[in-house]
Amino acid sequence: MLSKALSVWRELNASYWFVPAVLGVVAVALSVVTLSVDHRLGDDWLARWDAAAFAPMQSEGARAVLTTIAASMITVAGVVFSLTLLVLTQASSQFGPRLLLNFMHDRTNQFMLGAFVSTFVYSLLVLRVVTGGDGGGIAAFVPQVSVLVAMALTFFTVGLLVYFFHHVAESVRATHVLGDVDDALQAMLDDLPEPAEGTTVGADDVPSDFRDDLGVIEARSGGYLQAVDVASLVESASTHEAVIRILPTVGSFVTRGAPVAEVHPASAVEALEDTVHQAISTGDDRSLTQDLGFVFDELLEIAIRALSPSMNDPFTARSCIDRIAQGILRLDRRGLPAQVHADDDGVVRAFVPLQATGPLTRHLFAELRRASVGTLFVTQHLLEALVMLHGLVRTAAIRTAVEDELEAIVRDGASALPPHDHARLLAVMSRSGIDVATRPTA
Image 1 (cartoon, rainbow, N blue to C red):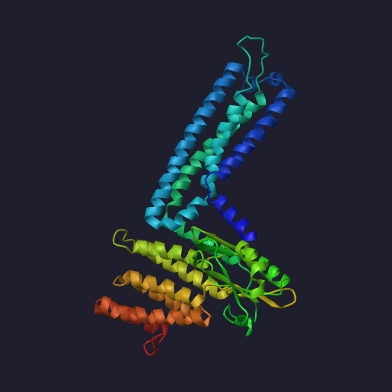
Image 2: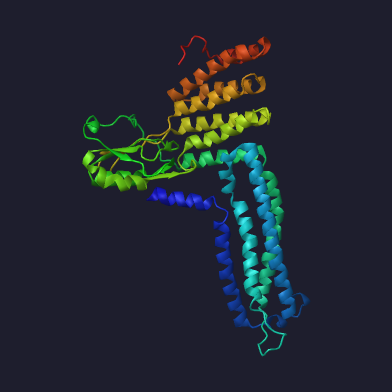
């Protein structure tokens, strides 16, 4: 249930209607409050101030001001929306469609659109209560406080508009985009459960009698596995004296009708089937919640696009290599959360597989190596990043993957680079003191 709620919350955060809708409701509430104050104070209280700046506004002037504000706000909201769509289009073509999710989560764009819409709503609601000067027996009433608040909101949104122009220009800079992805990676690492100290059990190390009495739960819907609510799995499995093993890793595609979990004993399948489906969250896209590989793949996609002949931007590719190497080092220092989960009595109740650090490292740097073949400027930087990782990482699987890629870079460079350029790669390896030439191929 928690994973479903988190999935809905992520969708709301990535929408361009949620924040404007909330601010629109706030505008309605604010109009009720300010109009109530106006009814209590009356429309002549400003006359007590002996200053031209505080002179009370007449009904015609109030209508003109509120009409101008409402018309200008809805017009500017359309401009802001158009600029936002333009930025999304440019980001999709330059950095890849996967990066659109990061732009959709941008609170500045959401708040900016909501500020103009809510000011429009507020001005319209205040405008409808301005009366007087037209006969008909209706008592004159000009909500002075409400009009002043509308003017204050206008000045505030004009300031926001100036900042929005700066933000739009900043948001499409490659370094800014890479920084946002790096922040998302760090936030994901911070949110993951701490690794279990001294635990060497893997998700495949099930109890010896697990497969003797095994039941299978099939997926009711297809999509990418976005998150798993481990706590609910452990609680339900403990209640029914069962063990649950989730089969796909977070980020992998779940095919409808394919096995998604195994349950021991098989008699508990019927009781736990609904719990399993509620604990796993699937969707059309990969998620930034628990899918570490997705964040790294965003950086990888930017690097591969930058190295394509159409983009030809090796400097951005080098920046991506730096971010990926930094992320791998963070992951090595932190360690992955436990894949085996026990209840309060210490009995193992759930197995949730995670993407292994070794294959993840191999995948990232192998793709970077293939994309940069023949480009010494990027290949040498990739080699230096791997050398740095080799001297700092502690996880054996990551170190082995790094050594394999170092060997592959040197081997590929012998055929793809001129002899004098390949000699520069060999010089970097020589200075590092790493000897991978005699290692057996993994």
